[in-house]
Every structure is written in structure tokens, then in C-alpha cells.
Image 1 (cartoon, rainbow, N blue to C red):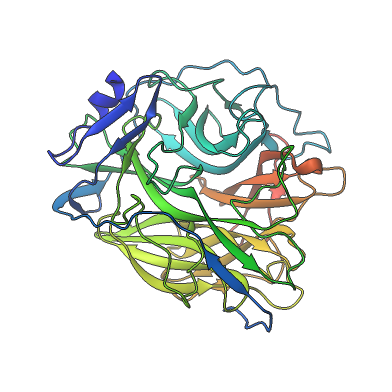
Image 2 (spheres, rainbow, N blue to C red; image 1 turned 90 degrees about the vertical axis):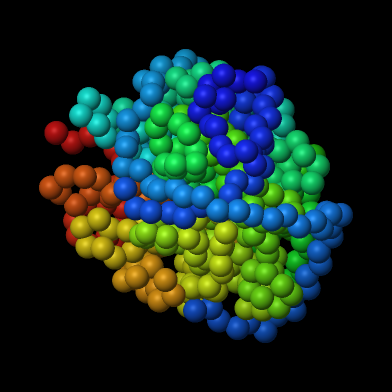
Length: 469
């Protein structure tokens, strides 16, 4: 058993920790007791849609109990991350091709050499230092059908250091979480990070606060959707880069559900089983409901004592568009759905076909909620949009009809699409926001980029070109 993980997580007697020595993050924890948290419009389309579910999953029920947790403002870490070796130098962001690119594919034969994306970026400040963590998904050409989760670290959020393989200690970077090996689990096919929240608990005995990772887990259960009017291939998970032998012309929509894992160091993760029999936090909606196909990109925001909000997307079969919905929770584990909050834009809009991969941030200065999202055009093109809400619940308004970040010009590294946005509000006198995103270029090659917006009103982002003194 990994000693770092054993020391990091000791829960109530209902919890068992099982680890794989070589890869501690592939461990699994049974569901803990219930936890109380304390603070420290789419358009109808006339088009034929047919939906088929294929499943061999068991249907078993589990029960639950009670305990207490609270978010933590503690941003200190037990150990200073070491600087792992990186064999993949990044292109200069000042060149016209790589403008905005801050994180490239890993070196050949590494776990993230074929595809990267889903950046979840966090900035931690202390009296001594500034540290940035970025969790992201990756896959290799040796295992092209499966995504894993990795961690990169930085001192400024621009120059990132990656590890070449699985993490071995609390100071490493690299591969931190693999798919589940349990045949009944919801996340046996792929996993992608969506949000990391730091919280502490009287029932989780640890020296420091605990990281809660909300992620999308994909299984082999397929959902077939036929829509003759769709001009692009529907996929879940989306694959911009097709590996030899994969058929990129046929829709491949696999069932996905929201999952939760916890860690003390952000590197060694233990799964928390939710109420669903697969270990997921909750299931898709019933037939006829807007989220009956899959649940993806569960992004969680802590609003206040006993009030967490989860924003997730699905494919709305009735209206024929991707949409984002909301669920609420008192404990971060048991969730109640509240319905759909935003769908496709108007005819010809950059998000006409819907909204996916929403990321919500509460503006610390103004108090309102800001949602950056990946807009899907009628031809499948991807750009990033922005919506606002006063309370973060059901009423959201797009700030403008245009995207705040579009694909770059023809010679850019991200000229085929931008998405999976992650918004970071910078501290300081000036109003500055950083937008991290997944970019897609020629041949479907992916990278992670950064763009910046300055001023009180966000209407567009400019790709990062260097620090200005």
C-alpha cells in the first residue's frame, strides 16, 4: 500500500482503501457517510432523432450515513513539488503559429503523447510562494482508446513542468489517475477532470485540507443517436484526433457519468462511490428528459454553507442541441437536479448547436457568476462563449452574440477549434482574467492555451504573447 496515500486519507470505519503499488491513484474507496458542508433557452428542431441504450450493468442499491466537512482556505502544501524532467520543449508563444500555446503534447511514448485537454487550473498563494497546478486528461498512441488524468505544476501559470510517467511521491508531477479496473464501474473506458475543490473534514483525518476532484467517467455502454440533419459527427468523449483503426465518420456516443475522488496532495487519488450502482454520483435522466443520454463535465462551485452547485452538460434529444443543466447538494456527494439552464443560440450563431464544457466562476469583486463555455456551431465548429447570472441558478444571459475566443487564423496551432475553457480570476488592483483552454489544430493535434482579458467588462480574450513589463 502506498504510504503517502495511507497517511493522507483515513476515513470512518465504512471506508476501505485498496491500492495498486505501482499506481496509487487507481485505488478505490467505498462510499463515506453523508457530509454537511460549512464555509472556512433552447430551440425546438424538426428533425428525426432515435436513441438506443445498450447496457449489461447490474442494478444494485447501496445505503448512506452522515458526517461533516467544510471548505478550506488553506493553500499551503506539505511538500514543495520538485521539478520533473520534460523532454518536450514548448514552441515560443511569440511566433504566429504558437501564439497562446502554453502546454504541448508529451514526448514520444509518454502517457500524454497523443492527446491532451480538459485543463483544470488552480492558483495557490502563500506568504512564501505562488504555485499553479493544472490537472488535465491525456492519452498515448500506445493506448489511444483510454484517457487518464495528469498533473503539471508552474510558478507563474505560463511555464509548466510535467512528469514523464506515474507519480511516485507527493513532490512528483505526471500521471495521477487511471481508469477503474472494476468491471461494474462507470469509469472503465476513460476519465477526464472537470473541477478540483479543496475542503477539510472532521471525519477525514489529515494534516491539511483534502482535494475533491469531480470528473467525467466513460464506460463501454454505448448510446446511438441518429440525426440526418447533423453536419458533423456526434461523439462522447469527443475525439478530435483519430488513431489508426478508429472510425471517425460514425457517431460514437458512450455513456458518461459524474464521479468523485479525493486526495491530500493532489496526486494520489481515492475514488468515493456515489449513490449509483456503478459508483457514479448520479444517473442520466429518464426517457424524455433533457439529460437522458449522458452526463458530462461536472463543474462544481461552492456557493455557501451547505450549498454546492454542479453544472454539467448533456445532449438534449428533444431539441437536438447540447445543453447545460444544474444540480445542487449540501454535502458534495448527494445531488438534486434542478433542470436545464442554457441551450443553443440563435440561427447562425457560434453556439447554435448548443453549449458544452461549461466552467462557472463567482466574480470575487462583483459577486455575480460568470460561465465560460464551449459553443458548438451548426457545422461542429468550436468557439468559447460567456454568460452571466446574478445568483448562479436558473437565469443566465449571454453577454454578447459573438464568441469571446475564436479559433486562430489559418496558420495558428489552434485554428480548428477552441474549447474546454477554465477561467481564473487574478488577484490585484487591475481586473485581469486568464482563460485556459484546449486548442485543436491541423490533423486534430491538441494543446492547451492561455488567453487574457483585462478590464471590468469581458468581451474578448487575447492570446498570451509574453509578460509585459
